[in-house]
Image (cartoon, rainbow over all chains, first blue to last red; front, side, top):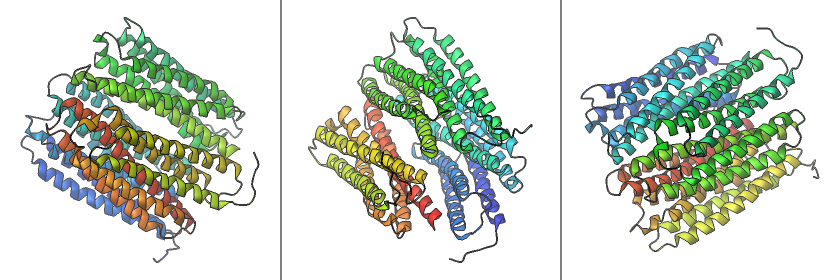
Length: 208
Length: 208
Length: 208
C-alpha cells in the first residue's frame, strides 16, 4: 500500500458527503412505501443496492485512514463518523427488507405514524447531507446537530404513538409483532442519525 | 461567549450532583406507581418535568465544557458522564409515559417483579447521587461502582423472572406486549446506571 | 497493591486468550441444545459456570490494568476488549438461561434457523480464540476481523429468516414472544463478537 505524506483531507470530506447522500437516497426509497400500490420488492432491492454502495464507501474510508499519514481529525473520530453513517444505512435497509419479507403491504395501508417516522428520517438525512461538506470549515455545524437532535425527539414521540396504535387491538398479534420489528428499525435509524450528529459535535468541540 | 481561564471545577461537580439528584426524584416518582390508586397521569407529567430539568442541566454542562479552558478531567469523559446521566433520565421518563399511554394501571396491580425493578433503580439512583460529590477527591468511588454493578445484576435477574411471568399465559398477548415495552425501559434504565458507573470507573482509573 | 514497573505484556494476552477460549466453551454448550433430548437445565447451569469464570478473568484483567505501569496498548482499549469479550459471554449465558426458563425444549425441536445462528456463533468464537494470541505480534489480525464481520452478516440474514418463520403463524403468540427473546440474545451475541473484532481492528490501526 502506498503511503501518502501530504494531507489529502478532501478525500475524507468527499467520502462523508457521498455516504450521507446515500442516506438521502435511502430515505427517499422508504418514502415510496407510503404511496398507494408501492412495489415493495423493488424498493427493498434498490435499498439493498444503495446499502451495498455505502459498504463500499465505508471500506474505502477505512483503507484511506490506514494509508494516510496526516488525517483531518482524529483517526478514531473518522472511524466513528464513517461507521455511524453506515449504521444508519443498515437500519434503513432493514426497514425495506422487513416490510417486504413480512408481506406487510398486504395491509390496506401502513399506519400513519410509520409514514411520519419515515418523513422524520428523510429530514434527518437531508440535514446530515448538508452538514457533511461543512466539516471542512468546521462552521455552521451547531445548527445541524441541534436540528438533528430535535428531529430525533420528534421521531421518538411518533414512535411511542405508533406503539400505542399497534397495541390498541386494531391488528392481530402476529401483525403487531411484525410491525413492531419495523417500528424498532425506524426508531433505531432515527437514533443512529442522532449518534452521527453527536459524533460531529464531539469533533467540533475538540477542534474549537 | 466569555472564556474562563481559571479552572472552575466546582461547577462541573455541582452539575453532576444535580443531574444525579434528579434521577433520585425520578425513581421516587416511579415508586409511586406501586401504591394502590396511583395517579399515573400525574406521575408521568411530573417525570416529564424532571426530565426537562435534566435536559437543561445537560445543556448547561455542554456549554460549560465549551467555554472552560481547563476542565477537571478529559472533556470527552465529562461529555460521556453527562450524557450517561441524561440517558438514565430518558428511560425513567419513558417508563412513566408508557405505563400512562398504555393504560396499564387498569390492571389490578403491576407485576411484583416490575415493582422490584423500580426498587433496584431507586437504590442505583441513591448510590449514584452519593458518589457524584466524591468525584472531586476521587475517593470512595470503587464502592459505588461495585455496588451499582451488583444492583444491575439483581435487576437483570428480576427482569428475566418478569419475562417468565409475562409469558406464562397470565395476561393476553397485547397486555404482554405493552408490559414488555415497560420492562425493557426498566432494564435499559438499570443498564444506563451501570454505564454511568463504568464511566466513573474509567475516569478514576485514568486519574489514579 | 504492588505496582509492577516492568511491562508484563504476556499476562494480558493470556487473559484475552482465556476469555476467548471460554467463549468457545460457551458456544459448544449451546450447540448441545440442537441435539435430540438435550438436558437444557444442565446446559444452562454449565453455561452459568463458564460465565462466572469469565467474570473472574475480566476482574483479574481490570486489576492488572490498575496495577501495571506500562500496558501493551492503551488502557482504554484493553478495557474495551476485555469488556467486549465479557459481553459476548453474557449473551451466550442468557440464551441458555432463557431456553431453560421458558421451557422451550418442550417443543419438538428448536427452529432450524436458531441452530444455524448457534453455528455462526461457534465459528465466531473459534476465529476469535485463534486471533487473541496473535495480538502479541499484531500480525494476521485482518483476516480475523474480516471473517468475524462476514459471519455477523450471515447471522443477521439468518436472524431475519428466523423472524419470518416465527411470525408465520406456525407458533402461538406466547411461544413466538419467548423464541423472539432467545433470537434477540443470539443476534446480540453475534453483534458482540463483531464489536470485539472492531475493537481489535481499532487497536491494530493505532499500532500500525
